[in-house]
Image (tube, rainbow, N blue to C red; front, side):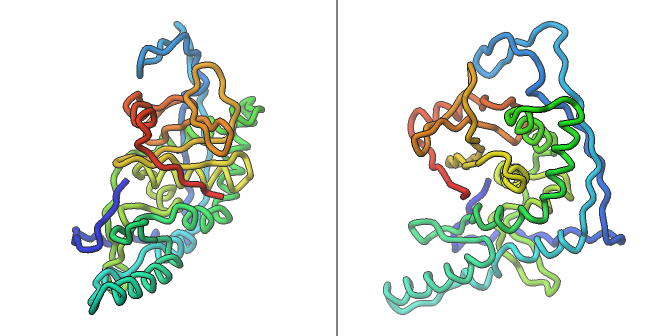
Length: 284
């Protein structure tokens, strides 16, 4: 997960080429880590029952390349918007507010101090759910064919699906068709993550949230720390689950960058939560 100061220039990268066909047919094979039998946890290490295995899942997903292109182009703001010339503090605030209003229509906003551009997670997810609904139904159908019934089991299928995608940090900028630099704050829209089959912590978390919320499976919030982001879902905690209290309810934590079962995240992140070094972003 990256933030970018308004006065920092980083390397840019061209957008990925579009496939010759108007559709992409992708095959995904993954293991659901939530289906192994854990005897106990010793810190970040799971002691697994001897002979325990994980459920294998597989599905084919069709994506419209025009939808992918449109989603990519809709997100991010021209770098030229981030250069401000002002006469006094009042003029600066006026221009920052104007940029904030324009950027909000493209998934980017400024932080509370108005000196950093950050991802508008809610905007990105709201823009993505409709286009991902059929994808989510396909994953849910595959899970149900393999005996998944409870809401928690289905959430586990989606979490493990997203975790199976490669972890890779995107650039902070891309170039549009006209060669103009577009600020993306190091995030990718969910359709782009799905198409490329990789993303970083916030990009993969936005894909997860878009998928589960597109079929009203579970509500999601993001736990945002200085250098990381993970999710929490509105599920009843089970034994050994790590959770957080939000809006007078327990939300179960989910790490989506790598294969972690529902209710477990690295101990270093629990330490940050204990020290209150985090923010909660509501997505509804």
